Structure formats: C-alpha cells, structure tokens
Length: 127
Image 1 (tube, one colour):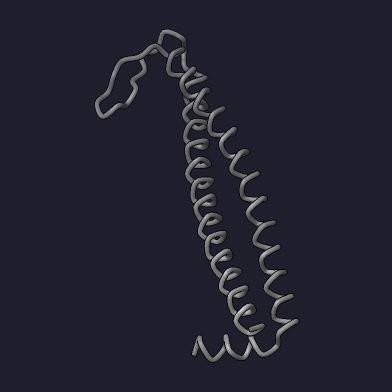
Image 2: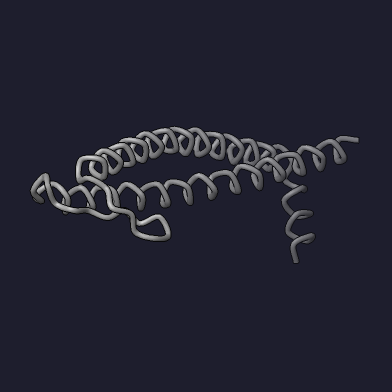
C-alpha cells in the first residue's frame, strides 16, 4: 500500500516538474521576444531623434507609409514602454516559476530520502 502511495506521489511530482519546466521555457522565450522588441524600438528611436522635425519618415506595414516624425517617435516610445513593462512582468513570472520548481525538487528529494527503494525502481524504469 505504501509502495503504491509512494509511486503515485512520485508520478504527481514528476508531472508537476514537467509542467513547470514547460511554463518556465515558455516565459523565457517570451522574455527573449520582448527584449528583442525593446531593442528594436530603442534603436529606431536613437536614429529618429537627431533628425529634423520636418523630415519625411516612413513606417513599414508590409508597404511603406509616409508618417510625420513625431507620430513615428511616439509609436516607438510606446513600444519601448510596453516591452519594458512586459519584460518586468515576465521576470516576475519567471522568478515565481523558478521558486515553484525548486519547491517541487525539494519535495522529490524528501520523497527519495523517505523511500530509498523508489530511487532504485525509478532507475530501473529509465534504463
């Protein structure tokens, strides 16, 4: 009976670990994407700022559309702010998921220390 309970606990911990690892990878990918968006917006702003106000600028939306410099600057500043806010939010999510993963790892260690025989069963199943 205890063996089945231990096995069920292990399976639950394993499923939890797989789920958390997947979520963590997803958050890390989203952070990379938002960081890229932030860098593009920053670099675009750096190129736009020194230009005179009456300069013709073009916005790419599949085709190129003529836009006043101020409109394009405003859009890039908003993209920059949005990306920075998204990265901050994703960082918080990442930290939370990392704490959850550490907690699940500790639960697994405790389970293996309480039931040393389960470690041998796990090793035999993986081979």
